[in-house]
Length: 354
Image (cartoon, rainbow, N blue to C red; front, side, top):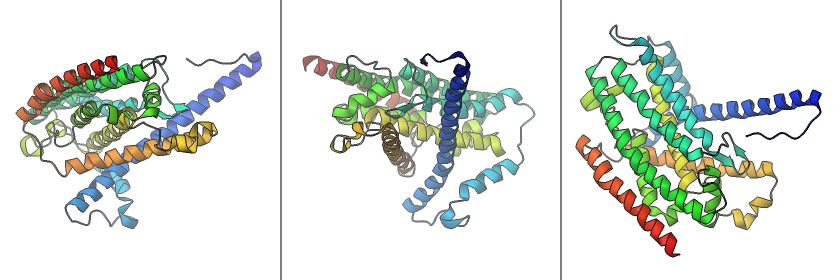
């Protein structure tokens, strides 16, 4: 809730306009940065895959291929958007819009620095879980609305996969909230800002390694990235949920996937690697700096950690083969879920003894 100092009546409107303008400018700038990162994540993917496979990769459009994402966007915009006659037109259009919206919405809770955050409500993690759980609707709608058996199978797989791995992801998050509540007993553990501040004495991936591994695996499954890309599985389903999509609508799914990768990378960095904190904050006395420099420092470290995890997502995709579907479900229900419960119970017991 925004608390305003008492001001003379005729200046109050100008003050409110200034606050609203600053908010929308900040939000607009972050969205531009986010969409730009998503576009260039596609170029990074192609460059890293070329490096792993000993190829050259994109290098024709612009210097070092840096304009390749722009060329891809222009190609998708000017291509014909084909839609089969038997589809549910409104739902088919809604699905990619929903995917992009949810991918952006999950970033709202991230603390970018000690003094900069878009959403400052008291239910940060609950909001995140709600947004992540809605992502399955975009994939399911895309699969069902196009009246294609391949797409429908991809949509059904997405529902089963996301539900299975959300449980493990939630248990890993509970272990993070438990550590936050113990380290900062007077703070709200549901706030990502509190989670980051609780890591000043040590990042949580060191204190909670099993929860960290579970969260990373579940994040791969939530983002539908290999080896968990069974919802696409081009060898089996031609493309799965987006088989009947073309042109800019297909591009929206493509962008949403990379947005989810960036969002998952930023969340891993926030929950387990200190977010905007650096290993040398105490040595440099960062907390005594001016707020503007604290913001620059914090955003830089969060961006650096996020880019590292984006590289890990790409690296894993071009290294590990796709799981078989029964293996995918077995890992989620018979390995990660019991391991997540055991980790939470053991962690709670150790913290009680300490």
